[in-house]
Image 1: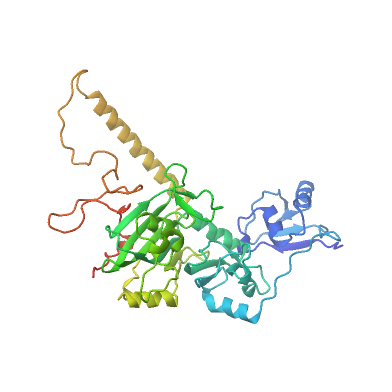
Image 2: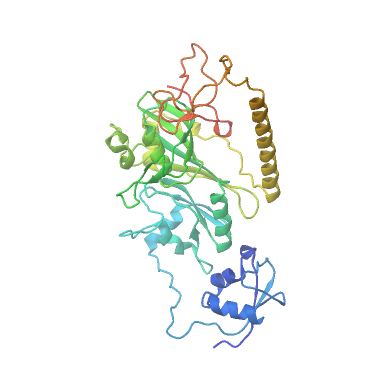
Amino acid sequence: MNDIVRQFTVGHDDDGVRLDRWFKRHLPQVGFAMVSRWARTGQVRVDGKRADVDTRLEAGQVLRVPPGGEAKAGGTAPRPRRELTPAEIELADSMVLTQDRAAIVLNKPPGLATQGGSGMKEHVDGLLDAFADKGPRPRLVHRLDKDTSGVLLIARTPGSAAFFSKRFSGRSAKKIYWALVVGVPSIEDGMIELPLAKQPGTGGEKMHVDEKEGQSARTRYRVIDRAGNRAAWVELHPLTGRTHQLRVHMAAIGHPIVGDGKYGGQEAFLTGSISRKMHLHARRLLIEHPDGAPLDVTAPLPEHFANSLESLGFVESEGDVEIEAPVEFTKEDQKRAARQHAKEYRKERRGERRKRSDGPPSGQTRPNKPSGKPSGKPGARAGTKPGAKPFGKPARPGSGRPSGPRGGARPGPKPGGAPRGRSR
């Protein structure tokens, strides 16, 4: 048994982590009960001072760890890293778009699962040992469907994994997808708001729109270009992260993603030279980096997607637009925004009370006056699918543009000030 007192310097990746979590990361053979006993008796110290299991560590601090705590004989040994074949190492290296001390960004090919499952032997998670070297094993922080290609972010260390996960869960990361869809949405730049839930009887393998029990799901989209009325090339921004969200939303408004038979059925396949593979690609990711500068990565299209664009007469270079970098809000910014929201809400309530107090005497009614605002709930017009909440100005007379939404989407602000797609 080791009888030497050990000292460790807290690294930048462990800045802000709890003491018990530090042990789990770096000395997993020391159980929580042992860490608690050491903390309670003052044997584990941070910069010479006593510490509790929930003490938050700071980079540069020196952690004193007493002797003992090694795994008992016959106990469970750490899982050895799997030896990868030369072909697996070559596949892993071929996917790398960029990497640094905190992240590895891959261009996942279609047909390769992100994680393993029943009967799933080859997947991205199983290839991450190729990047481990002698340090910690890299880990996934988000996922892509098996048949979806494009940008996949891998955290190189536990600290960067926590950092990136917070950005994804906080919605500050910006994800841009490209897709080919069947037909052309009547609204070129819009928002889809349809709640999603797991479809009963599918074991959670399929989602569906569920207005009553579903979780809120929002997708912004923009038509980049169109091939007559046959197909459209669209840019998609998921504002929430529900399972299969983009696929379900596009199918729900009547324009399934090309090749997505799961949600679009036979209507999702185009005849001619267009591939039967799914045409959904995670084109770009913009996310804050632990070093401060934003990480902005674009993934080239897979061969089948690029060939389909060319066959339909689309020009790939016309799809990319400028978008703003993600903004990191401090706690003070959030408090200030909350106070402003509360102030505006109180003003609205005061205005409502004044209107009620100025109402006509009992038994009398006011003559109806046009208010300039549509009556009834948004999206209640005939032909509008569930989740459609139109807003914006009506079309000018003679413009030829639809004055109301069709297909379950409402007009939305243009992502990053992007121009509308041109029509063929």
